[in-house]
Length: 360
Image (tube, rainbow, N blue to C red):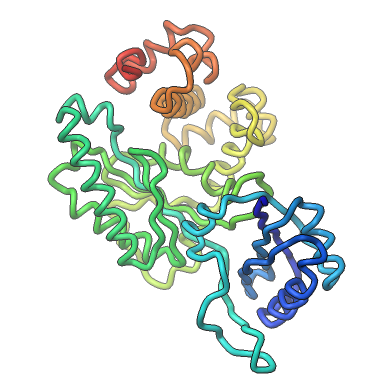
C-alpha cells in the first residue's frame, strides 16, 4: 500500500494533543484499512505530521475524521526510504519525553530540517583527469567521508547523484560544521573537485507535491550564488542561529533574497510539469516589471536573467545525460533549447566537454 504524510496546522497544538489523537487513529485504523506508523510535532510552529500507510488519501481523511475530526491541511504520497533518510525514523522514538496514563508516549520531535547539499565536479569530467578506475576510487572515498562526517555531526546522509550529496540535520550549526570539515579533508583537491555547499531549511509537506520539494527545488538556484570553496546559507537556515558565524567563506542570503529565489524556483519547476523558463512568464509570477526583474537578478546572482536560466537548464540537462534519458537532441529540446547545435555549443562552453562525449 502507498504511504502518505499529512500536515495538520493548529494554533496552540501541543505534543500531548497529537499523542492522544494518534492513539485514537491507532484505535480505528483497521476500520479504514490504514496503519498509522508515527508522527512529528512542532509546538513552536503549531504543526504536526502523520505518517500513515493507507489505500488512498481519502482513507487517511476518513480515518482522521472518524477518530478525532482533526482533518489534515495537506497530504502527499511519500517513499518510506526517503522519509527514513531525511527524518531519521519510520516509527515512534523509543524514548519519550513523558507518558500519559503510564501507556501513551508523548514526544516533541519537529519535522523541520536543515538540508546540506555538497556539490562537486561530475564523474565524467573527473574521469578526464584521473581515468575511470581512479575516479571511482575517489568518489567512493568522498561518499564515505561525507557519510562519516554528516553522521558524526548528528545528521542523516543521503546521496542524491554522483556529484551531489545531501545531508539532513536538526540544526544549522551541525550542517555548517560538516561542510567545514569536508572542506578541510579535501583541501588538497579543492581546485579539481570544485566543492561547494548550499544550506537551506524547510518542512516535508509545504504546498508541494514532493517530500521536502520546495526546499530541494530551491537548492540549484542557491548553488549559483557561490563559487567553489564557499557555502551559501539561506535566511531560513540562518534564522535562530545561537552563535556568530565566521563568514569568510559563507554567503548569507537576506530574507528578501531568499523569498525571490524560492518564488523564482517555484515558477521554474512549475508543479512538476516541464520547466517554465519563459522570462516574461517568470517576471509575471514575481509581479515585477522587466527592469526591476533584471536588476533583482543581477544584484543577487551577478549575472543576467538569461544566463541564470541557461545555467540552470544546462545543469539539469547534464543530469538527464548522466541518467541516459534520451539522445542529445531529445535532451536539448526537453530543456528548452530549440537548436541542438546551440545546446552543444553552450554545454561545451560551460563544462569543457561536448554533450555527445559526455553521453559516451
